Image (tube, rainbow, N blue to C red; front, side, top):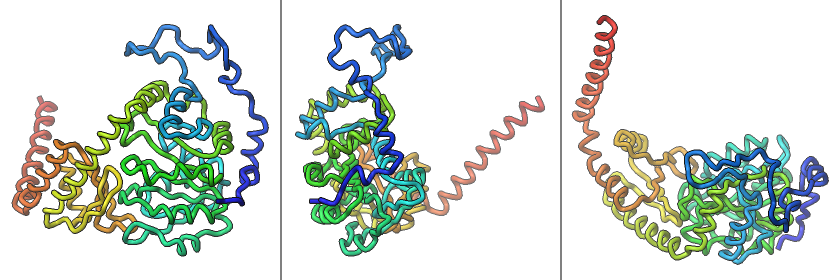
Length: 387
């Protein structure tokens, strides 16, 4: 258990000043009030244009109902839960609150998503990268060697967002136990292997912040909803800094209903895992597939011959996969999201046709056809101009 972490001493000076001048929130002012008539927010009294649902009122800034549902679902106190506009907002907030621009460092294990570099740069954090090994794990000794007095934040994604491989739980705990700064464990893709979650360790480590997402298993990517779990003290600090009404009413309502349907969620997880294994086996039948890494999420990392050509061909067929070939430890790899049976069949069928469609003669014929098509369009425009 980390006993060296003092939140108040750890916070940058400007954040401490903001906490001192914190005013009572609207929810506190109106707590317990009945028959309230809100005429102070410039809300429309005529409903919402374009839908029968009424979203004319600002959302519950505390997400009270959703927080209660998630609290019961995960058996964790509501005081240790906070919601954001996707996990993106939450990661950005943590960096903004706990780091000083141009001074503090953050250690992250590569490969990681582009958003981590983006938010680090946006918040003036100096990003130190340590590559994972061939098994997409990290060495405890090497990781601790990368940490110095300027390392303010430790970022670990579990499972890895590129490979789908989960980090070893004991390694994660070892790192948290020996680190004096803020630890972000990004569990945005944990939904398909929830036994790897570290939520149960929130009470043991006052510097631990866990971030999850409703995008994948719950199917709410378009609603933008993320959840953050931490000590009540950290939650209070983030609540003070975050924007009000940062989670819209529709996201709160739909997520609260979803949490009451655990059987449906479990069915989706089971079907996704079955589809993932089936897709992996079918991809292994292709000679251009060199390796498929074991995944703990709803995507797979596939090592292929000529990845750029592979991606380009699929794009011409209107199928898009993630190019991971230039990321640390992912040379020659692409990441493929697991689709439903119809989508996976389309991918496999398209790949079966790749050798014939990319043959030199076929490529030449296609290019000639494209050139003639462009010429036809040009002459059509020219004809209109000259009458």
